[in-house]
Structure formats: C-alpha cells, structure tokens
Amino acid sequence: MGEVKTRFPPEPSGFLHIGHFKASLLDYHYAKKWGGKMLLRFDDTNPSKEKQIYVDSIQRDLKILGIKWDELSYTSDHFPFIMSEMDRMIKLERAYCDNTPVDKARKERMEGIASKCRTQTIEENLIIWEKMKLGECKEYCVRGKFDMQNKNKCLRDPTFFRHNDIPHHKTGTQYKIYPTYDFACPIVDSIEGVTHVLRTNEYSQRIP
Image (tube, rainbow, N blue to C red; front, side, top):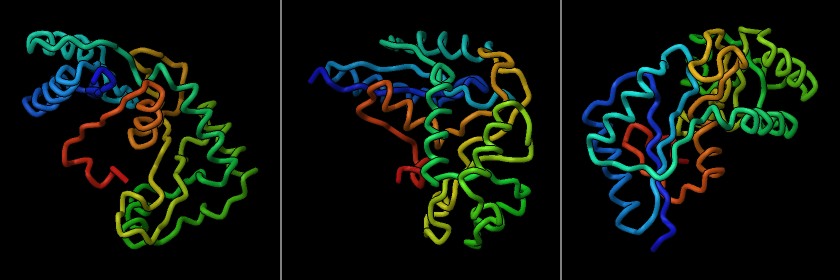
C-alpha cells in the first residue's frame, strides 16, 4: 500500500483509440487501488511520426476519462543518460554498430544468421557510434549482442538505436539518433521508479 507506481506510456504519433483507453484506465485503477501513483510518459523516440498536437490531445482525452496522473514526463528527457548507457554497452561488447540493409537483417534474424558486423572490435564500434551521434554513418543502427539462436526472435540482436534526420517535436535538431522502445523503456521505467509494468499482449515476446 502506498508504494505502487504504474505508467501509461503512449507514443504521441496519433489520437488515442479505445484500446489505449482500456490500458490507461487499468494503469490508473491499480495505482489508485493501492494508494500509489500513475505516471504519464510520452514515449517520444520516433520523430518521423510524433507531433505536439498528439501530446495535447492525449492529455485532453485522459482528463475526459477522469484520469489524474501524478507525474508527467517524456522519454526524451532521458536521452543523454540512455545514450551514455549505450556507450557502456558497446564498451562491454554487449552491442555493435550494423549497416546491414533492413531486408537482409530481417531475413538473417528469422534464420538465426549473425550479421557480418557482429565481430567488429570495440574500437571500431565506438568510432562508428560517435559518428552516428553527429548524424554521420546514417546507414548504421546499433544492435544488442544477444543470442541469434534464441527461440524468441525478438531477442536475436534487437535494434536499440537508429538514425533519424527529422526534427523532434520537443528537442528539435539536437539529436540525430534515437533509441528504440525496447532499449529506452526499461531504462526509463527504472529511473522513474515504476514498480508495475502493465503491457498488452502485443508486447508479450518483449517481456524477457
């Protein structure tokens, strides 16, 4: 009692639909039932789709539902720390920079074939990573170095950072690369003290 903290993390890339309403009401219900807090966090990691108009409309619609969130945040608030964590992962050889074309990478993931970039040295990856931060090496993404034979294909070296030149609705042109949901969300959950993560079935394979 009093220690539960849930979060509703919509991507501001469109208007809320009835599935979002169900999720937000469940987050709110369990937070209030246990005398805790609900966090509204905008998962703003893809500037290609996100706009301020959606940020405003989501807040307005939640208020219509009677939801009163206790804290408001944005994943982009934590970009510097998320990037520093990727620095650390590369130095630990737990991630690598990959320029495999998207279609080929998808095929290799399905077949359990390791990328040709997987054996790059830490030094090689760090050079590319620093260039990615500057908006160079646009053909590269960063992938976690997991297990390409894992039966859960979501865990076969997932993409954690990718390039995007489109100005962000909140940070403008400050960043040239953005973290994926898979990398950013658990980090930010930890930073913000979330105790209970309620997820719809579409994310079930990503729980591990």
